[in-house]
Length: 153
Image: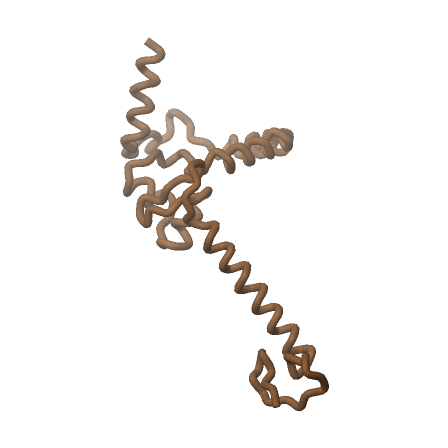
């Protein structure tokens, strides 16, 4: 007497090589095996050191899209994370590979991107509006602005 590999029910053998009591059990077993394999591969990929990935300053693992990781893992918004570590709030935190991929897609779809920019024009701040520019800037932004002023002079 043998037991099914999936449900562990004792089965009557039709052949010596029989491992499962039904096709459903065999299918479920293979799906679970594939799911475990994919999860293991994903765990190996994420957080692994690769020079082009960006390091999360909370858990010190490396990712292509740090803000996505921060949102799902550490339950912080990208703004909170950037303010916490003095990063520029207006800039994305992406690896070079992902940035190049996004820029390539934007160049391919420049008509659509331009159309979306034109649609958003009416929602932009005007110089005379109250509250425009009244916010604290990060250290990274202030440094960038100082360098910009030095470059212009």
